[in-house]
Image (cartoon, rainbow, N blue to C red; front, top):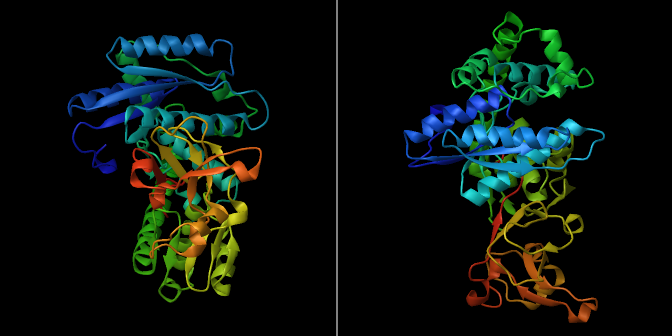
Length: 400
């Protein structure tokens, strides 16, 4: 855990637990680690709902952990069968765990991937034609917007984790899909033929991933240094750039790509070639963001999301998270043209004003639609926005 910190006093952590041996080991080990630090663990037991017995299995896992004093929450996903089920399961699982972390006030979500999982990930990404960043494998820690995602067991072999669970007297759940040859990862697992996770192929892949990870870390440090000189990112969802200081080299392309991802609310940065083209033009739109010749990078209005119900935890436009308790019936959406009627503080560019999140009371007749509040502007007054906060929380977290 030490390289993933600092964790501060009495940290609160959510652990993703499927009932398999590796996630069970994660929960057991984290519970012991947190007990020494006065912290608290909540196990998020994700029930994907893809097998008839999954609900009973989740209840059994919860019983095992609760008998050891570990707080649990069963998180049913109710995923429908169909194409890309494993990708949808990963996305749904992470979203459910992040929501649980927000609910219990945890700053970290821990996952149980181990050394063999990392080796399989490298092979998958190599088959997909990933570049150096992808071949660095899963990061031990990364921002997931609302919490820091950590993988404390990436250096551990699955055999060691199985031993932890056996020593605790638990019999883990075995998901048959992990050996289903219809899935690429399962076929790669069979090809490696290394259930203990410490064979020569797995070891070599882990070493290769570590080398690529060091290269990725060096690139991230260079990007961070360039951004520190050339960019100012606002909590209101835009950035100011010194285009001359940013430059046009590979580091500049990576830096601008990361900013485009944040401002556009996307999961991934645009292709490097497209970013290089935008840098060469010094203006234009890409990835849901717009760059002006004055170095203003803001959300592209035409790409913004429609209004969504305004409730605690609501996310609008993939970038802003609402916290607080708005009045019932309100919607969260773009300020738009209504911003022209409001006083604009000097620090806020006029073009950005239209992209700010606002609370609306919608009506069938546009003339009866009412602008209720713009938290960023304390409109119509501090007392109206009291207790309502809009946090810039794009999905990919920090630039890099």
